[in-house]
Length: 279
Image (cartoon, rainbow, N blue to C red):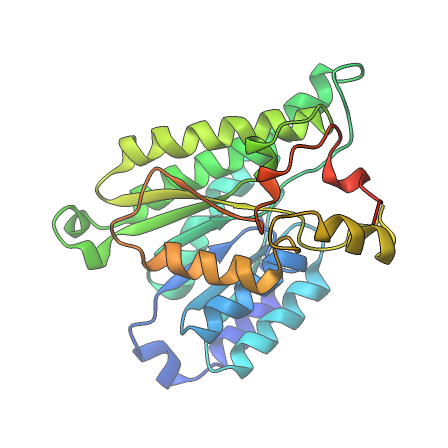
């Protein structure tokens, strides 16, 4: 794994005042774009220092780091291939080396490939499982190892893992099967890790609904799909940010998942919401 040297330069320029406060530190996987970017800016606005993980979006990550520094927070960009275990294992130590501590990991990055039971195979299933399940498991273990023993008795020292899941786990359909299976495994892991890593580290899930337009959708089809919920709209980036910030601070919450989707999971659909185009 490599770290953007430009980002370390920016980090160093953030100033002595920022480095001497007691800000908490969050690592956000897939943090350079889309929901990850919103999360990074949201945590920074709340006073957190931010490690922005990226895979290939170096320019986006460096631009985001500059935005966070402009808010008065410290930030770095960390490159890693989440399909490579040694890359993943380096992320937490690099955060600790840069900031002195890591308090929260948001496992936001995921691979989302279209397949069904008719065409799923070993290769794609293993690839998605490595990224969508393996990387969060390794990062959870690494955060536990990096959390001081004082956290056993001092709640203020404890870490938290936020696993980004999906409302479709509560409203199953046959589309995107490999993705769905990997997220279902991560949901189960959220419960098991909450038991295994307590009390040093809390582990929680956050399940959004349809939030941002994908490359496969037109603006009209996205808008139509976004409306099909009890609240007349699904999740928005600001909803996900607010929920993540709540979970990061909710000292009494672990081993459970917060569904933030406008009630989308309450509306059964025969196909994934990505294919919904009706008004």
